Length: 462
Image (tube, helix red, strand yellow):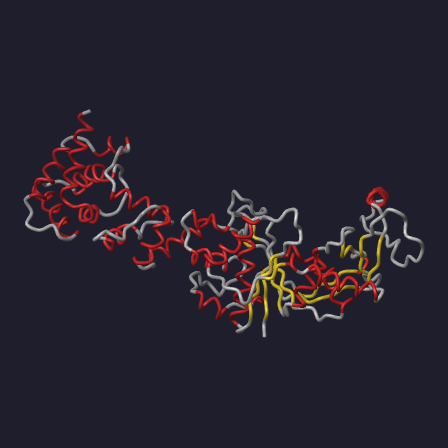
């Protein structure tokens, strides 16, 4: 059985790079009928944030990445780690190091002065003497001193690192708290991980974790290290570029399926296919097909995908989603007309809410350039005559009825459609942009059309 995990630290919010890693891990588990586990790496008690933890769990719930079993919290497992540390000490595979911070700083300064890479020199590796007084030791693991540390990465291929690159690193601090690479290896083993998919910023943590695996006689999982997401200029993604808390995307009006579709294509592909349902992602995904090179964040692509998912969402679903953006259509008798008129143009739910409000709310102000462009010559007279023609119409029960009256007026006056359409649009919506005028008029009704035309007349008269 394939067992994967995602292991965020609650020192900050979940950003899209982390969500993409979680998505890849989730897809691989689901494709194989396996398990996807969630572990919270909260051993840094001083930096943990309850708000960040809640936001991580909310983000998973929002995007629909369900995990199996209970969340594992590293902070609740300190006794387990202590047992393993004691085991390594007893077997002579780890040792107490009494080197002070000052001694370590001096060593590093000397090594740097000689052009060497700073590293611990192993001075307490085989120490048998009397421990120095007043020094609380750290615990270091005995790393191999010759040969190579090798593993096959499912994305990058064979990785071979000289053992000399990995010193006897600390597995427990002087206060007894275990370190990252130690607890990760313990937890991945105890949780039964078969495949670890993570960002390639962890690539050089892997040799250290393999040292722990080997010391404890554990079989390591298969590793896949995913290249980072860059901005469109090829630089590290920043908050300004889109490296935001995942829940900020919800606030900005993105649909979770659009964000998931966007992320799966950052570093993985299936030919030229751009739109994927979750079912297709599960069926087609294989981590060995993840690109070796970094992917590029493209906001236009995300907006295009989001527009696609908005356009193809049911109106019932959109009514629910729009409640988060202060638009409540539940009691409207023209829900379908409103949404069919607006959802074709909106790239985000924020835009959709704005378009709907633009139709439903009488304009309080008018675009100055639009006024100058639309209201020339007989423009005001034309739209006033149009209102009179509407009032004399036998039927105004559909957008088609309103369109017929528009057609009738331009034929009677022998004018181009724009002579009516431009001033009417500004009168009804306050600007030149928006949905079809026949749709707008059907939604707001004759009385409101008449009111808005009267308002523009008063505005123009000053």
